[in-house]
Length: 201
Length: 71
Image 1 (cartoon, chains in turn yellow, red):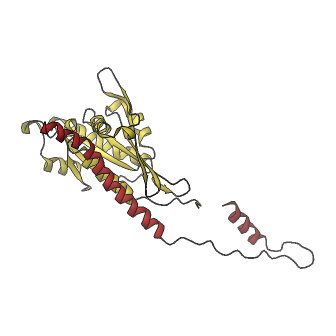
Image 2 (cartoon, chains in turn purple, brown):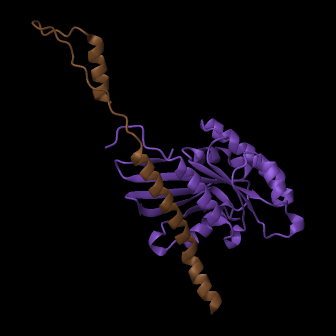
């Protein structure tokens, strides 16, 4: 859980990008990385297969510097979307503070979106996290594809967004909606920041 | 030319806007946490000791003190 640590003057939050394979999770992180000023560019760790699909996970440490006297870090992760990497997804979700669900807007991918969302809920529950209350935003990606190939926002919202969380249209390949999505989940996570329960000076 | 200038502005702009919003959120959050009333520890009860023998009579209080100290 994210905390304001008064002892070390640190705020650290973990955000995981979840969704079916090839929905654009890694592309989101790559866009964020590409927009970072040089002095803040850490190392984006990305393990991909020969066909460019995420093998293990992507990790982008986002060091925001000192804000209000606190060293602030966001850790952005993606999970591999393919069904057979279930164990990795569970591992990456450990200690998560907020989730971005990146859905593939293509009509033929609707079943995969639903399956991935169910998988997310099951894995959160396994981690002892309540899928109904954890900070979550939806990004309906690939909105730049021809209208005949994609589901409408209303249809996606009705099918996937039963919690009524904030949702964003995304064209992650060109950066559309990427920072809006990140800003929204960051805001939700920060609103839940709490002081640590242990004694801190 | 205009496009390249716009591109340069966009490069810094997206992250700068994000930072500005987040900085404000964090400042407000830290401020509200600072302002939240802090729980004061309960005042310590003196450990009752028999006047002459030096024996501790009320072990329950001693255990409470020990747990408090460990915390």
